[in-house]
Image 1 (spheres, one colour):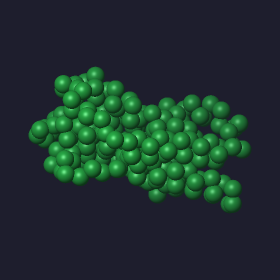
Image 2 (cartoon, rainbow, N blue to C red):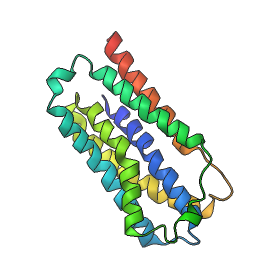
Image 3 (cartoon, rainbow, N blue to C red):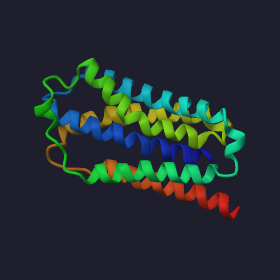
Amino acid sequence: MDLLSVIIISVALAMDCFAVSVSKGICAKKFFFWLTFRMAFLFGLFQAIMPLIGFAAAKSFAKEMTTYDHWLAFGLLTLIGGKMVIEGFQNPNSECLKVSNPFKWASLLSLAFATSIDALATGIVIAPFPEMIWKAVAMIGFVSFLFTFLGMYIGIHFGKRFHLKVEAIGGFVLIGIGTKILIEHLYY
């Protein structure tokens, strides 16, 4: 796994954060820097911690995984990507009507956890490449923070005009990376 793959995975994982923050931005009437910063920080933190947990779990049985790690990476990234594609094309629920204050700690923590589950599986994918884990953790956290912050801004200013399918795009990217990993291990 090279740095470009880590960057692409980071962007793909951040699409969940971006999609959620755009929807939160659509619900918000005005841009509040500290609320946006808190949300972006939590999303970036959870996205950074989860691959580390997945990596640590996978390292405990890494020697047994080497014969099929490429199939595992392909399967996990395809499942996560497929889920993101399906969710990206579903009709959005009216989240603004469901939650009285979408920026409460409990709401943000649950969203940060929910959007970071796929990052946990990514830690398992990175296990065969231990030299990349800290770069991946830093990149995933930073990109998720940035995309969340940007998503809030876009949601507030442009979200009502455009209906973007960013989560589906991220899903297709993850499927592509999984396919790339599989092809590299089978043919090189």
